[in-house]
Length: 99
Image (cartoon, rainbow, N blue to C red; front, side, top):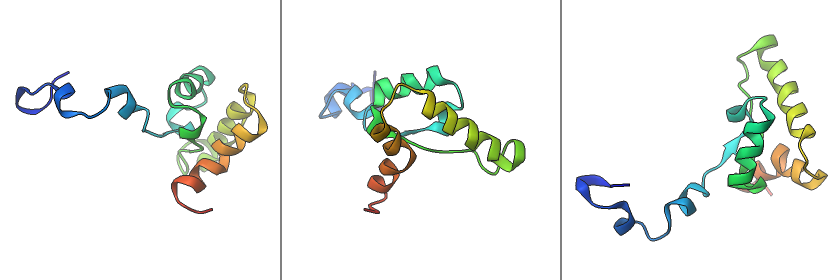
């Protein structure tokens, strides 16, 4: 991968590029209701970097159907109660410093 003016990114970055990608946050709206896509995001980012999100007010019933579908998708994953709580609420509180 190359940076600006032909400089290799590896010479600019202090960490491996994957370490920077793992600093990103994903949300359940980004993954839609596709369990395999959310599992992939969880595998790469970790449960601490996934937030509950919706496309409200877009979609059926002004987005309410997406909310129900996203909740069902998260609940269907092989996560324990504490991990689901992080996705539904805890991670957002952490990111927004609401604790």
